[in-house]
Length: 99
Image (cartoon, rainbow, N blue to C red; front, side, top):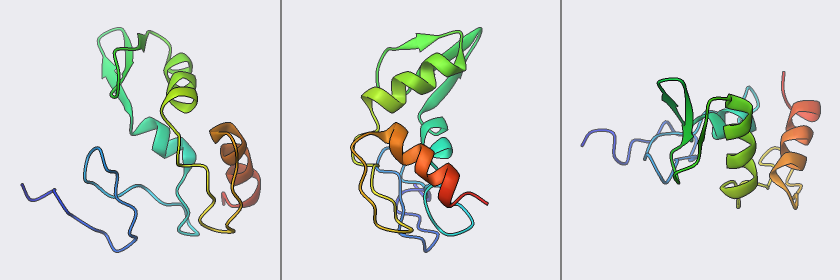
């Protein structure tokens, strides 16, 4: 498979897909894109690609993914700050690094 092992040079590869993780203008992983990469569009709704959770509302699926599956993505690559919760990292990224 051509996509396996593909690297765009950023060093940020999604272990589930083998594809590069989208990065912001400063090279930092955009939390919004990380979460969206784990969402699957269904007829009439959305689901989590990592488990059986689904909802007709994108906000419910986003919140589910952030709270249940985003462990280990709480370290800011741009400034090195470590956050206990993904929501804290997301807020920090939006305020400090998103252009």
